[in-house]
Image 1 (cartoon, each protein chain N blue to C red):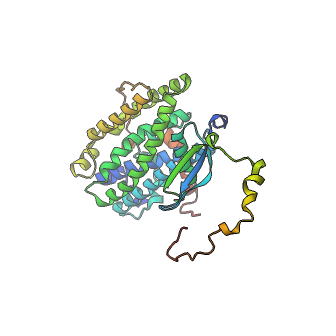
Image 2 (image 1 turned 90 degrees about the horizontal axis):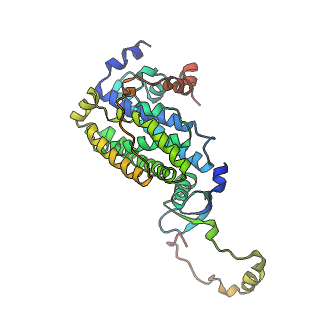
Image 3 (image 1 turned 90 degrees about the vertical axis):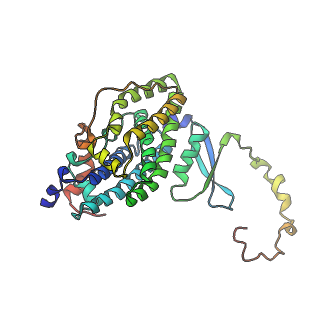
Length: 96
Length: 260
């Protein structure tokens, strides 16, 4: 497993079927992007979980700082009027 | 027992023998790849090799099932896989070679994948509709296998000095076994004449193109052809197949017909 430890980590996003978004499903170690796609295919789509794969080097993801959560997210808490709860969603829309 | 011995290699038709060659190559290679489970260099590779093994096993099941039906002696895929003797196995010798190190396994896989892709491509248009259906399914799998193994050939060949030297040595060791894949005998010629299987020269040309393209990208040398020949597909095997079968067939030999 030592070799694997030297491989960078890739975050894996899978599109379950046409019309849906790619969703984060986990991560794999791989030496390069092509290998990451193959590993993601072998690890995360063995049971027909997907029709498309995105891989992104974990190191390339810029994340918000948990320490700033209060200033980033708290101000939205008391603004319920931003929720679109006043609309009727048509039955035909399956994947909103 | 008498039925089984009456169906020895000599009594087989060309189509039966041909089906067994393709089926056994996939079956024996699947068994070899399965030996990697729990031992691959990374858990992702463990899964990758296991997935390939399962694809190959699936191909073998369909082909053996068909071969058993044609034989007409009531032997199903399990009977053919687990209760057939070594001399009656028709896999290409390269499939039964021990795994060696990871690079050896990758090189063996690449050489076989580059052969199976054009093989299944042509069999998908076979005059035998059942074989054509099986091949159409197998082709999609083989194309992925080739993508996987070719990727590793390039990564190892065009990697470090050590990985380059080791994968080149793997190629040299395995190369003499590749000629058997394209050495046409009476069975190969008969199925080609019947439009059931491809002419092996045709396969060899396409195999060579794939191999040369990938080796070029991998900065590897194509080894020289050796005069040596292997005849696994005619039932004459290396010393390795007996050991592999002893392990693979043990349970069904000890408890015939046992089920999970």
